[in-house]
Amino acid sequence: MYCPYWVVQLEILNLDAAIEQARWDPSKVREKLRRDIDVYVTSVRAAKLSELTTLYEGQLNRALSEPVEALLDAASDDTWPAIRELLQRESKSAISGFSSALLAFHLDQATVDKMILQLEEYAKSVVESKAKEEAGRVLIRMKDRYCFCQLFWVLISFLIKLG
Image (tube, rainbow, N blue to C red; front, side, top):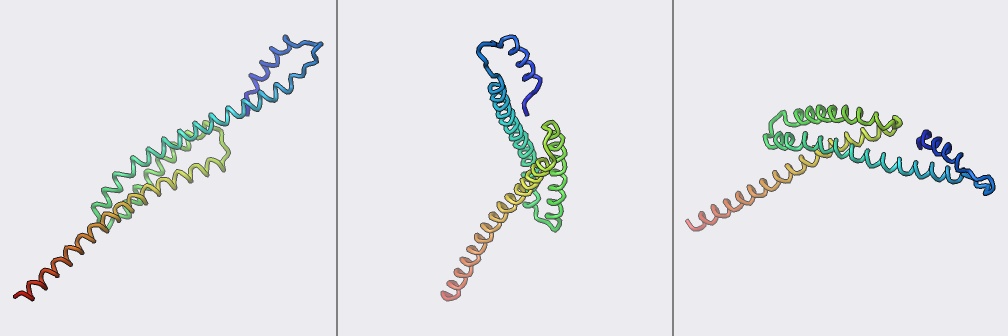
């Protein structure tokens, strides 16, 4: 994972600084440097991949939240097919860009597939959360309507008893 060019350059510089009498073995230092570089590269890669994932999740959230909410508010016969189409279109667009961006990281295919699957699941979770929010609002309206109807019938029965 380390950059061999820099390690070779370091070895060339160390040749000039070698002290024969000290019998110093630079291989331990070289190995520690390799490990340190590997750790650093891994942490930077993880941070960049996290930023990239967050960027595309945000893009999906913005692209799906308001349209899904509007479709659920309209509530027609073609609401769910329209939501499915929107989800597929926006997911495909985001995954295309995400896949292209992942190429720069030279990841193995299994890791790329896993990250793409996580992005697809995120898109589905955005739609699910909006559907749950709308279901909660509908439930509140139904309860309000039921309470109003119940109150109406209590009032009617009271008026009948009075009359």
